[in-house]
Amino acid sequence: MPASIKKPPYAGKPGPEGYNGTDVMPPEITAKMRIAGKIAREAMEAGAALIAPGVSTDAIDVAVHEYLIAHDAYPATLEYQGFPKSCCTSVNEVVCHGIPDARPLEDGDLVKIDVTAYYDGVHGDTCATYACGTLDEASQLLMERTKKAMFRGIKAVKPGRRVNVIGHVIEAYANRFGYGVVRDYTGHGCHVAFHSGLIIPHYDSARFDDMMEPGMTFTIEPMLTLGDYRTETWDDQWTVVTLDKSRCAQFEHTLVVTENGSEILT
Ligand code: MF3
Ligand code: CO
Ligand code: CO
Image (cartoon, rainbow, N blue to C red; front, side):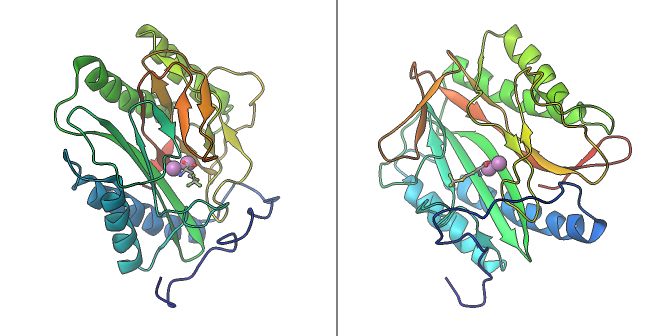
């Protein structure tokens, strides 16, 4: 890590300090988040360009890391609560928080890459699912429909609505296909804080009734499965898998609420 790259305050600490501030950001912050978001997306794409049978997720991690630091951004996951790598790579039944490793990818693998850039004091957080070689039809459809589910959630963003509207539309769409909608991991307020405490559910829940307002910035990142929505975590304390080992797809954008909808920052 070059000394010129500014680390976030939580890097190398046991955990982030709790964030107590607002999720409504002024234009100066969202302007910086647009840059952080673009860097995160491009780093993710640089990693995704390597996906092929025989390539390891470690190689993807290196590409993401190099892209981020070449663009003056810090990989927010690196040393975040002890996470050891510069992105999350989650394959097949791994839901999220997969740790890049040396195992070669195989033809037919469903590969999620999740990158968070920390740039000039703000975060851009994005994830997409990619095919390694040729996917079976069920996985291909899951991937396409999870992306559509995310965009349906994004279209539901408007000031004056409660955040559970997002979960309502995503779950209603997922139900058409009998997909599981992961509940244990959610979207989150994301700006100067990586995870602010604001929760954006991807399922219908009256509990999450925060009102959306212009300037609010958060992620929408549905995880849909071919089976059950329940998850468990490996002994490594990070790798989250579906309880029934069914495959999972995920897409994520960071966005800002505008006067009449939202703007995607990633
Ligand atoms: N980027 C993930 C998210 O969407 C968080 C990863 S935290 C890590 O919120 F520690 F697992 F890397
Ligand atoms: Co996120
Ligand atoms: Co993410």
